[in-house]
Length: 72
Image (cartoon, rainbow, N blue to C red; front, side, top):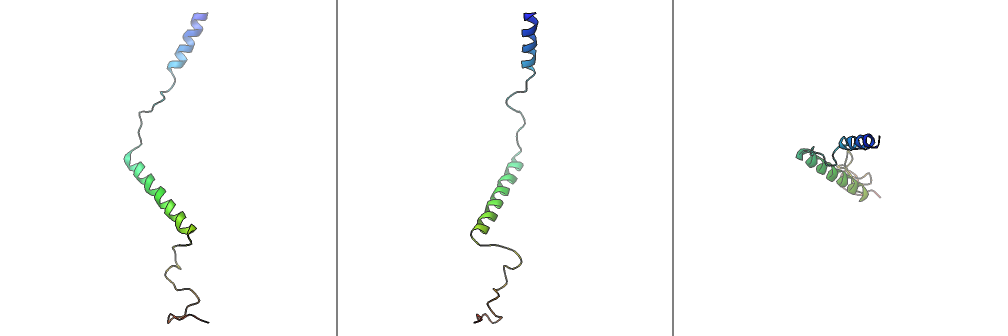
């Protein structure tokens, strides 16, 4: 009985998956991931520094009239 029990344990251990996987991440996935991380960091940095982008970026502030003079 002891012999069959140890044999059963050995069989279970041989069916375990390998610790190292033979599947590697393609290079294009790594490149797109790095580009995505850089864009997210740039977006966060712009917003934390008070800079932004969007529809109102190219318009003068409301305190400036059309001739470029500030209103009192």
